[in-house]
Image 1 (cartoon, rainbow, N blue to C red):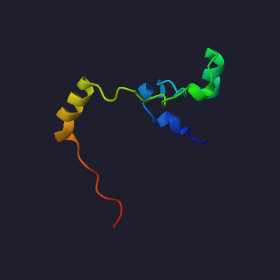
Image 2: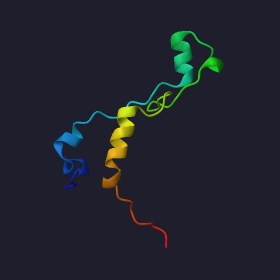
Image 3: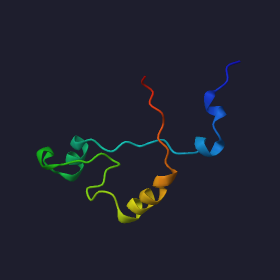
Image 4: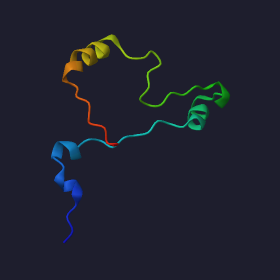
Length: 74
C-alpha cells in the first residue's frame, strides 16, 4: 500500500488554501472594458509603493537572527 506524502505534513499545513494566481491582462481588459495596451499589471504579490515602513522595521530588527546558508558551490 502506497503512502500519500501529503499525510506527512501537519494538518495546519494541509489546511492552507492553494495559491490562486492573478488574472491575465486579457481577462482584466475584457472584465473592465479596457485596452490591453493601457494596462500595466504587477505580479499578484507586488506592491507599486514598495516595502512598507513596518515591514522594513521588522526586517531590520530580525537582521541579527538571519543566517546565511553555506555556498553550495565549491
